[in-house]
Every structure is written in structure tokens, then in C-alpha cells.
Amino acid sequence: MAEKPRLDTTRLQKMAQAYWESAALMAAVELEVFTAIAHGHDTVPTVAKAVHISERNAERLLTALTAMTLLTRENDRLANAPDVQRFLVKDSDRYAGPWILFTKPRWTAFGELSNRLRSPEENRLGAYVNFTVEDARRYHAATYSIGMGAARLFSRSVDLKGRKLLLDLGGGSGAYSIVATQTFPGLKAIVLDLPPVTVVADEYIAANKAAERVTTLPGDFTRTEFPQGVDVVVMASNLPQYEPDLIRLVVGKAFAALVPGGEMHLVGETLHDDRSGPLSAALWGLNEAIQHSTGRAHTESEVKGYLQGAGFSDVAVHPFVPGVLSRIAGRKPA
Image (cartoon, helix red, strand yellow):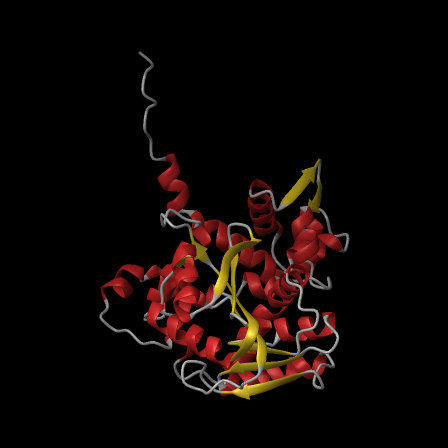
């Protein structure tokens, strides 16, 4: 009989210390280590000088980043890993440093997670209670780059030829609307989001020279009346922020607003039906406890059910970003 493998604490220790890796990555982004290496400061002494830290601390950080496979090392020369080179060099057009730092303000709160889980406090708006224009500006400075990437993927994945009016629910910076109206001639879009957010959305829309195609509607999509005559509704990357009843409410409002034959796309972090993962969706659901929100992670079948319950047909789950985002879509019967 084969001997059972001996159990040890290695896996548990790795999880318990995972925040050390997060801290190393975030510090490297804040110090612009990867940018320095991309610009030729590719040894411990030259990195130390470029980012204004001691050689001892540079050696400590660079050794950790190499062990994390964010850097490669050949003799004394360092180089960025391919994804680091593309997304974490500050002058790259795909720079995602602000997104890497996006959750850092929640660091202390996650250290108090057990207390947050014990707290009876709950609210439906979660992180958006008392949200200001400056909050929105900081939020979308972090999410805009990654949002534009998702928006480009959406417009490659979904054929909106012939569509006339897209309603972008909780559209944030307007990324989905900006890219969709660039991609599909004749398409116009309305971004419906909280009033402070639409102030910032207007700035991104103007910066992308999209104001003739994309407008904003300040409001709360759980309460604000939707414009009529839309033939596409998109709700992207905010599913875990809301409880099932709120998603059902919004999907029902979208169904009523759509013209016959119109389509709705819910893009979000969804769980497998057995709730075993993926980890990303599970953690975004857990994050709602930090915000004292009533939101939670939803399974793919649950999201399909929200659409079917509102009357949508041809409801299906489509891969989007594997392990991170799914796209669930349905059509209003003609």
C-alpha cells in the first residue's frame, strides 16, 4: 500500500505570507523600479541610485522580485518579465501601475477582516456611500487603463454592427462606450452612473474626443429611469458589489428599456456553479465585507437566471478573461 504523503504547513504558510509579495510588487511600482530597469538601470547599484534607496534595500527588493519571477537575472544584469515590461513601465501606453495599487487603500481594513465579518453594519451602496468627485477621479485614475483593455476585448468579442444606442450602466470612465462607439460607426452611447462619477466620465470622454458619440446621465441605476429606445445594455465589472435582488431589479429595468431584439451583456467576476472558484471572483465577493456592502459573488447560473427571469432569451455564458471575468448575454425577444 502506497504511503500517504506527509502533511506539512508549507501551503498554509505561503498563503499567510502572500501579503509580503503584494507589498513587494506595490513598492516596486511606487518606486518605479521596473521603469528604471527598462531605461537601462539594470544592476543593483544603478537601480538603487535611480529610485533613491540604499544598495542594501535595492538588493533585498530586487532579489524578492526575481524570486517572484517579475524580474530575470543573468549574472549581475536584471530584466523585466514580459508582462512587467508591457504593463508596469511608466511610459508604456498600456501602463497599469495605478491598477496594481488600486486596492492598497484597503490594506489596513483587510488586516481587520475578522472584525469586519463580525460587524452587523450593512449598506446597499457599499464603497459608494458619500462618494465625491475627487473619490471618482482617484478611482478611475486607477481603473481607466485596465477598463480600456476590457473595453477593447468587449468590442472585439461582440458584434454591434447596426446597433444605434448603447446604455452603459455603472459605466465609470466610459471606457466601454468610448471604444464601442469608436469601433462601430453610427453607434451612440449613454453612460449612467452616480453624479460624481459622470463628472469624471465627461473628462475621459472629452479626452478621447468622443463627446459627439457618448453622453452621460447622472443617477443611480437602481432608481433612475432608464432612457427608452436603447438596443444594447452593458453592465460591466461591478456584479459582486450588489445583492441578487438589486441585480434582478436592474436587469428588469434594462429589459423594459430595450427595443425588441435588443441585447444585454453582464460582464463580471462570476463563480463556477459549485462555488469552488475561481479565486478572483471569490475574493471580490469577500471584499464586499470590507465595504460593509450587501453585495456578494454570483455564480454563472445565478446571473443567467437573473436575465431569464426578466424575460431575456438565448441567454448564454461566454468566456471573457479566463479565471477573472465572464460575459453573460441575452436578447429581448422580437
